[in-house]
Length: 224
Image (cartoon, rainbow, N blue to C red; front, side):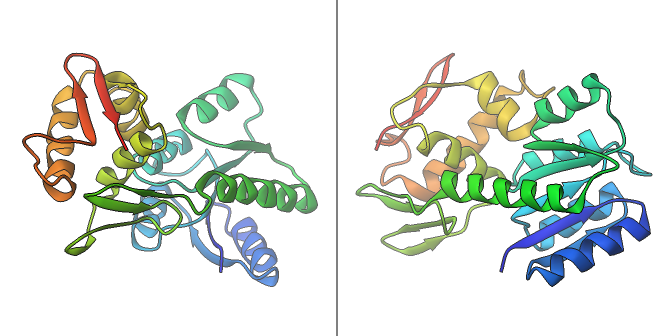
């Protein structure tokens, strides 16, 4: 069952959306503020997030950044803010769609279906196999000869970006922004630490990796 997380401080709207989605056989979690949203997503990762920007504790754009550090769920912003700058900020932070309040339920449901179709198409059932490890992108599962490998959400996000771009050099700044968010472009030590962890878990010889390759001063590349 598809899990949807709805984040809005309007309790009546929160309840109405939850009722509508549950009636259409979605599994629904709700949160009335940003901190609760992030905590709930961490415990029960959603397939899709419906997010208001005007939350009592955090701005919705901050929540988008927090989710995008590890979560691949589609994010639909549902907000009364209709200024172009607000829409651009949310989309640049990693939101997939933006719906302005007031809205029609049929339109929102159509946007939800479209977002989930895109997610399914993106994740597909792709499986990447090397002599050292196998990655099932749809199941978010990594295995070696010793069995399943437990990855942290950040490790998974970093690995997924690389394996979805086989043979392509991904720059340090791009990786830092995509995994940790804007403002982290200079934190190259993060990449060194997490790439070392991934190599220890996945490479046959972490000191001489065959698949998770560093291009000094430039970035990283996955070689199948």
